[in-house]
Length: 366
DNA sequence: AATACGATCAACCGCCGCCCA
DNA sequence: TTGGGCGGCGGTTGATCGTAT
Image (cartoon, rainbow, N blue to C red; front, side, top):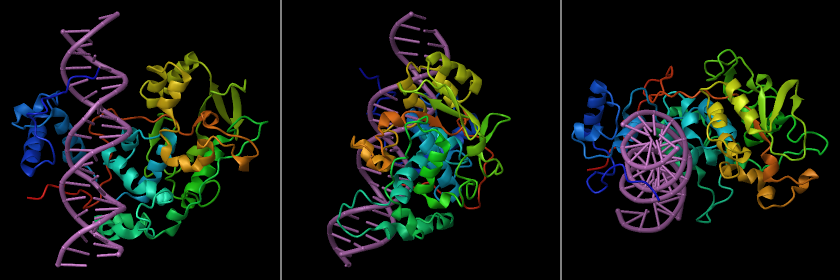
């Protein structure tokens, strides 16, 4: 099968963009916009580039108000919490971080955040002692903002214990008090996320949900709501073992969603322009599919697999006094309300740009 | 100083879903 | 209703850079 390529791969230039190409593209878009078609754009401005390549270049590097490098602790926390919540849906995560691109966040996750969280427990290719600090010079040069990221200065990042699955007992709904479980999980992931049992340390762990407009608010803007204790939770019930459709978590309503029709209703209630609502309403033909679309699955969260090594090995989690498998994990909790995803290709947020936050694109050496 | 190797990140690839004729 | 075109997305690659040996 497969589809026809969007352009003639033999006649288009590949590889790094030159300053001249950037100038052409930027100049044209500044004056005329994209003209509604990326594919048609390169010939108009005399670029031997694929339209997709132009789009990528514009979105990731040329459009205004972009930030590169130097992720703050708050951004780290948002990325982590959203990753745990929705997996590797970088575009959605990026929509919550003004000035960041999905590519940036994806790269940052793969190269830094993962290691921040897990150190190098699994791989030590050269059999040497840990070289976690090997990039110190460049990292520090990259941004002073990184100085509080604690990549190198906070040894606890690489010393996180391998986490054990969250216990539950048979006589309570599975993952009852799920937000508490997740909170515990997050605390284990990074003790610095919380100062105490109730409050996010800097208000940044959980993007804040504004119940008034059903949107997810950047904690920078909205620091006063404790999402975890106030947000409704949606549990995708795949468990054949419970008939419960509602129970309370700390007095908050939690609903099982058993049927596709119920999912659709839920989607409607959530509003038509949320990712969850779309996932619920669109092409979501089975619970399993929905789970894959909406939330964590073992593949999406493979980076977190260490947390559940026993489960991954299909071994009972012996520390729990009971077995716990991935399908149990699929009693899903959606700890955050639906994200409002900007469909504006420019990610037009109120951008908080710092002086010097805009980096020059990297060009190939002559 | 040279080399090896890991880290970074820009860019590509290919799939998916939406839109429209 | 269907199929093609296109944009969007996530995963992956590979050139480049920095550091350790």
